[in-house]
Image (cartoon, rainbow, N blue to C red; front, top):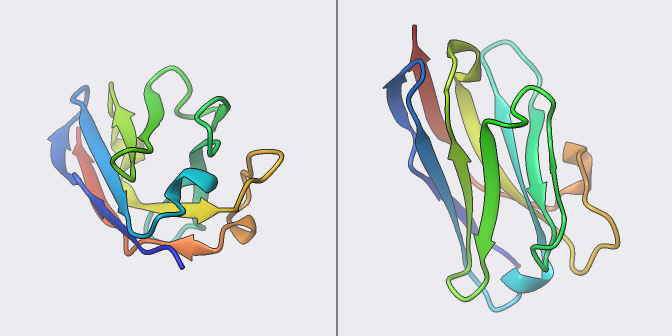
Length: 126
């Protein structure tokens, strides 16, 4: 079992930055790929970014590439999403998720993820 708790969301202006954190319970965090997804009102939950269990592989949605950076600290059981140059269209509830253990490739589909956090709201005003 992996329990995930997101934090760091808030209300910011376009062009600002935020860093989201995802704190995981359990001693198996380092064996799970960690993904970030987001869901805007009336829309499907969509992939944002993923980092492999080792931290050696990452993938991003085209819409955030070059602006968002995913990272992890396995010693602290925490994954991060650094979001720069935020846009109003980034407004959504952001969820972290865990996929594993020890997957051979990083997943970009929400169905591949077993454990989910409760989400944190990010609102970007224009």
